[in-house]
Length: 189
Length: 189
DNA sequence: TCCTTCTATGCAACTCGTTGCATAAGGAAG
DNA sequence: CTTCCTTATGCAACGAGTTGCATAGAAGGA
Image 1 (cartoon, rainbow over the protein chains, first blue to last red):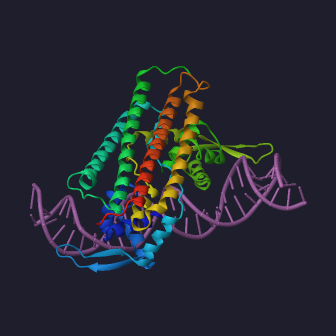
Image 2 (tube, protein in one colour):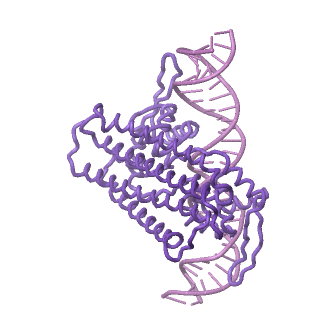
Image 3 (cartoon, helix red, strand yellow):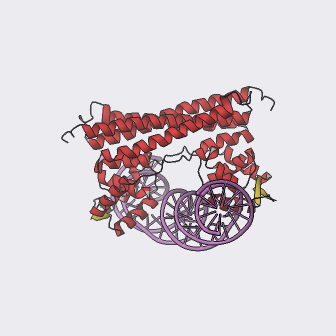
C-alpha cells in the first residue's frame, strides 16, 4: 500500500493529474518509489472512490482535458495514521548482486561490460541529483532559509546522493574483482 | 523472473529443499533478494515442471521427508542466458524516504523514534555482515586463497556492508535534521 | 500433560505491479 | 502529407508477491 502514501505525499506537495504524477515518479519522488502510469491511474481511481482524494476536471487549450487530483480530509488522515505506525526496515532487491554471485557458474569476465553499464547509469543519476541539489537547495537561486518541507526534501535527496556514491564505489570494487579473476590464474580449490 | 535466477544461483552453490531455500533467503542470498516460503514452493514447482530443476525425495529420521532440488542442464542454460542479457539498473523502493517527505505534513519530531528504530536495525545487520565476513573471508578460519566463487560472494557481501554503513550515516543525518526542525523555530515561509 | 517450536510442504484468495494495446488531438520534423 | 512525439486516459491479461490458513510428526519446556 506504500504507493498510496507516496501519491498522498506528492499530491500534498502539489496537486496534479495522473499523467503529471507519472512524470514525477520518473524524477523526484520516483527516486525512492517507482510506478508506471497504469498503476497510478488505477490507484488514483480507487483512492478517489474511497474518499481520500478530490478530483477536478480541468479543460485545457491545445491539449486534452485532465483530471486534477488533490488530497481530501480523509486522505490527510490516512497519511497521518501511516506516519505514526512503524514500518519494517526495507529489504533490498538487487538483481545485479544475484548476477555477480551467478557469474561463478559462468564467465566472470563476461559481466565486466554489464557492470560498466551500471556504473555509467549510476554516475549519470549522481550528476542529476547533484544538479538538482544545487538548483533547489545549495545554489544561489535556492531559497534561504529553507522551510521544513524543503529541509526534509533535501535530507532525502542527500540520501539518494549517498546511495549513488556508495554504489559507484562498490561497482569499482566489483570491476577490480572481476578483472583480477580474469587475469589471475584460478587457484586450485 | 529474478526470483528464478536467485534460486538457480543458490541451488548451484548448494542443492537443497524449499524449506532450506526459504531459510537461505532470510540470510545470505536474502540480503539481496527476498522471498517467502510460499513463493519459493510455487516457483520451485514451476521450475521443476519446466525442466530447470531435478527433484530427489529424501527420507529423514525424526523429521519430515524433504524434496531436495538441484539444477538440471536446462536450468544452467537459463541462468547463463540471463547472465548474458543486460538488465536495468535497479530502482529503489524506500518507504522510509516517503515517510520523511510526508513528515512535512505532520509532526517531524514524531518520526525520531521510528528513524532510531531503523538505525538500530541497520546497525544490527552491519554487525551481522561483519561477523560473516570475518568467519568466511577475512578471519583465521577462512580458506586461503579464496576460489572465484568465494571472491564473488565476498565482493557482494562488501556491497551489503557498504550499503549498511551508508544507510547508518544517512540516518544520523536524518536524525540531526529532524531534531534541528524540532528545536529551531520554523522560519516564516 | 499441554503448549510451543522446529522441520517440512502446500492451497486459496488477494493485492501489487508489468506489459501490451487502444484512443485522441495537437505540434514538429521530414 | 505522413510520421513521429507529447499530452492525457484507460482496458485486459498476466505474472509477482503477500497473507492467512492447514497439516503433521518430533522435540523440548512448563
